[in-house]
Image 1 (cartoon, rainbow, N blue to C red):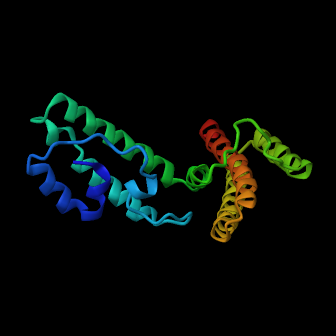
Image 2 (cartoon, rainbow, N blue to C red; image 1 turned 30 degrees about the horizontal axis):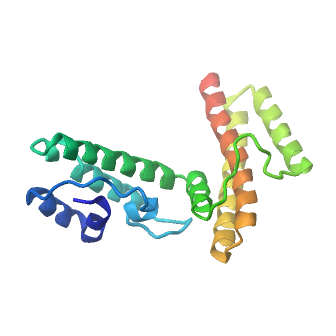
Image 3 (cartoon, rainbow, N blue to C red; image 1 turned 30 degrees about the vertical axis):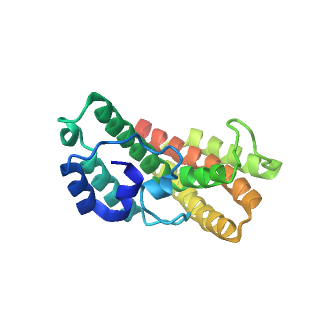
Length: 196
């Protein structure tokens, strides 16, 4: 049983193939996360459909379904399950999804690199971080969190537009900005837990 061909037939087909005694095959590492999760190759995908598909695949790949198989086939099913986990986690959030889409096009954003961020943008980030560090109440931290969510929503729309137009360099620059704001969003969560 190969993972990707099962995606075309849905859960019922997967269950019937699991019960026919067919041999489990190793996962195809060349298949994209979009194909594994049976969703459109799009920056704005249906995350509810993605979550349903994840549950469906994990149910099909559950170890109990393979307890009577060979050790090698059990290993393959574990590898398939790991591939599904990776695909799901990558596609669930806009930032990791966008970075993955660029990766499929041969582009990468290096860790720690400013990715061409201009001085004005970096100053804005420094100011936001300072205000967050100085926040004394949950309300102050929440205000920064709300502003950050607005920025992330706007960036999501811009990234989607850039990717739809095939403007990969623009998408890369916007994803770099999204990385910074996603980091601020995490810092807001940490600050709120400190203040509670």
